[in-house]
Image (cartoon, rainbow over all chains, first blue to last red; front, side, top):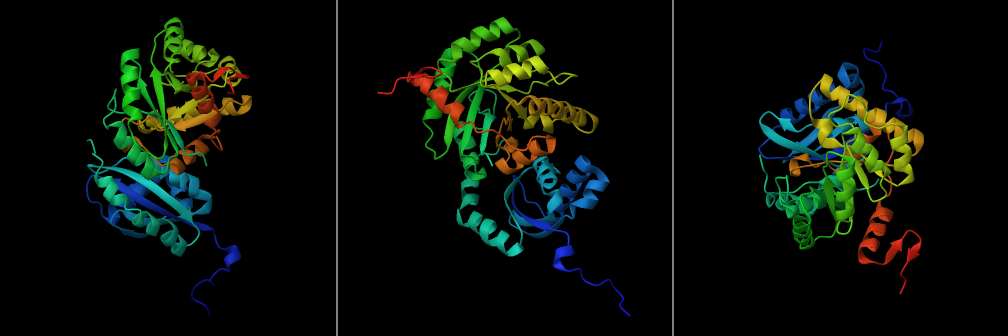
Length: 131
Length: 232
């Protein structure tokens, strides 16, 4: 007797997307800061039902760059929620969406890798950040 | 996806970052066109700002715009007439109904910014939107204003903006979204801005190259009026 439901075939699974992002901020942020800020923003803008349909989770996060997962039908709302985050605690933040992809592998290859190769972090350091 | 932001402020007027810093940040965000719309305070200043903006070495198209803030339609008309000879993009600070109406009626205006600002109604009616369609005036959604407030206040702003967008969709007016940023913290990437507009009821932004090209031709004297052009 099975103890858990059988894995769904690909055609019946909910379609998801991976959003590659960069957090431009004036202080250091941990993984949990980012997750709670996104949760809070979705909750504030779309409520509990919105959050339940978002299917949001943080896949990876390192040095300001990361990948988040969300359901395909929530993608625009997800980007909308990211755009409305302007502060995490005392830190000023701006979420920059680098791109959206169907797999983690291609999100890494197409967006994160390219972003790091372009030397953007060095360029950002040269821009003055007013309070 | 259209990659432009036609409403930015730098420290030349009310902003906090220099135009160069804003341009560098816009390059990182992936914009192809940005416009500085500083608050108008005289022709001399305007020329100084434009000279400053021209110095920036960049791969993206930087438009020299101006935002006009006037209290009555007569003054607005006069100011538009004055600045049109210098600015590539004329943006009118909306909010007052008479100003919104005049901006939509005036062929020299390119953008009407935030018509719902400080109002309890959307600030646009059928006449305004029909005039905007006729005179090719873009109706602008300002992201900075959407960020303001919390809870009920923000929901009210969303409601007014959505109502304006619905009316523009019905009558065929062009709607754009701009960050209206005062510093780099207010700037958002083109994808996020487009998503905000989509959620508020508009699928995509129009192409603005034609408008910018027409304005630049007029400033250089190559275009005399619509349809009459100096070709050699």
